[in-house]
Length: 234
Image (cartoon, rainbow, N blue to C red; front, side):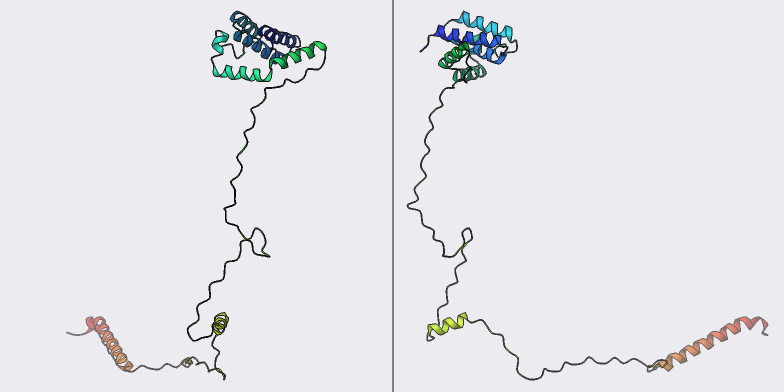
């Protein structure tokens, strides 16, 4: 395993290389890794020097609000950020990357840390004790089976089983009408209209007529008396 001093130097050289190529994001990552390696090795002064260089190049970095790298390492956000960089750029991968850059070969992608082994999933429960489902022959899959036929009624005592079964299976017959001509329908009574221009007098109509004539005569006599009274002698 590489020593802490060598790891710090590898990360610093990678940061210098990407700084010359104007690749600021990669430069900042390797400066953070170098400062973190120095802090883990107990070299706090060097870690603060690397942090100061990082903030001078990138004043808006994640480490800006903190007074020191040790204080920033207590923040959950900074811890998760540095842990992700550690998994992505392992010391061995960083050394191979630096050697490739020095030799002029294209830089290989860093190999992240191996993921945790996949936990085997439990096997599905055995279906040995489950009831089996049988499908009728000729039935299409996906369709429900037809409902079972209702149980046959027991035959009354003294009647053969075959006769009772045939009687139950035979549909009910409608009663047929008796042979013969259909009964005539009653015709509605004919309406009688009175002859045009002829009216029938109701009984007692002459009494009303006589009263009307008497009333008319009395009214005429009274009117004649009223108009003729001034001309009559006393």
